[in-house]
Length: 393
Image (cartoon, one colour):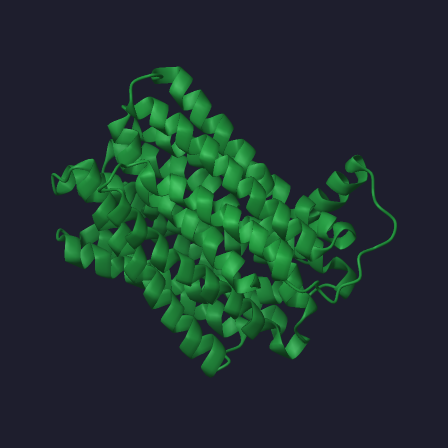
């Protein structure tokens, strides 16, 4: 049940990211406006994630999971209705952008509960020796949703571009009901003393200042910023470089992201679950994979080659994220797992704050510049990986 909730959340997120370039073009939005939608919602998600992780200490993991899925369902419905209004010409320009940004930010504020509580639940039911494999299963479930999301979105987009978003709202709503009815409670015993809202906010957000976690946080943010730079510009590149329609680009990007998720999933199953690689080894393997993918995207001129490059990047991300979540969990006590799970879950959102805006901004100057920046990011990532290995050894 826990892994299904993670998979459904990933399905919805990936589907939205796959459709956004095409939906943006179809409603007359500029590339930077599409990037703004993702960046604003990612900022809210990043702030809310450690707060929800902290709340899971007192409310319980299961309750927070159900809240997150319910909020995701309602938020997606709101986001879909605004886009539908834009496609029909009922709202446009600044009003459309404002409606999309606000609805997505409201959604992000609640849906941030799900990944944080899922990671904390996993920490509750695994020993330190099992932690990397446990977080790897969370990553595998995330990748499974990422596999299904793009291909289903590409197929359903043939009916109508916004149609897949309504499907996400229904699926996540049903998952919230199933979780409430059938998920066993976590073995974690909720704290009896409930914190005030101000105390909860301070305790949750203080995770960002924890010196034990700074290197991991920075590594995770840079990994996901690299991915965001690519994901949020590739759909535009397919439309501009290969003269695809918005619907065709959505299908092509969906298939590319699905293939990347499959590669990431296989890498996690083989390297994390079967070979039981250490977290630091996973980090070391992640960086050259992402760097090689960026180099190929910079040089390639064929859609097939570009898609193969994204496979490498997906593989690197599949290695990196479980490692960061496991290392963060192992550095703190049992009483801090919720807060730290929220911080680790915020890494993707933090990467997507700057990634889409910077990526789409660079794209307007030159279509390949976002991938040049990803190549540059591998240098500080390599230094951080060296520090992680040194400090663990």
